Image 1 (cartoon, helix red, strand yellow):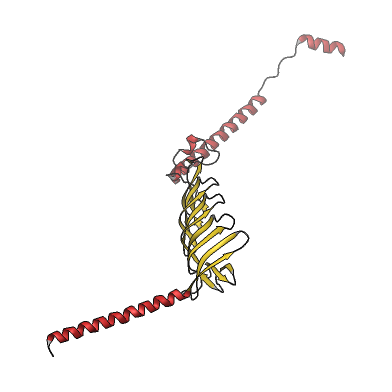
Image 2: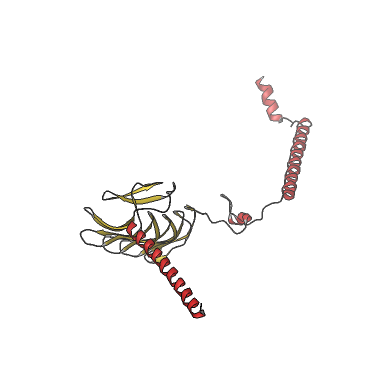
Length: 262
């Protein structure tokens, strides 16, 4: 067989394999598209537009909260679901004004990425980042006029790190959180910590060592013993003075008066 014929057959083989692979990929994509369904619901207040997936790839986890669809209603449950999971872009509107209420993405029933909420007047209410259904990352909250009132970060659905609040557009002193609890600021050095009832001067004094405490206690004991001895000496001296104290001579006029009365 001539070389160019072999080369032509090799190219034909490669082309046929490429066509087969592409055909399989297209079939897979088509099957996946069949699993998604775009839906629209409405009640007396809101209009909902979303996408659901028929066959989820992941098993439910007990600690996670899933959003799913069944019989013309959207349900939210923790740990499991019993319908088609929301998957893709979710949009919620006010029925009367068609104004946005909420928008974000779901990934197999869990919120994922940036989610925004709006007030009825169209101003932003919040902008929160989600990861696998829980708040994680940056979050911004606004008042009814659309002004920022707080900037913070979340970790596992709880505030974590510095939180900045704003009053009339002015940034306030940040508050530090750790797993949703306000973290108290500690002094740079432990001995600088001010104790209740102590003055500023006392609080700045370095912590006493064990040796210094022992010396101070010994000194206090000696001072106490000294005071006790001084007190005993004083009492003894007073007692002796009272014994040997001369009685004062009686006034002659008083003695005469006393004799006359007798």
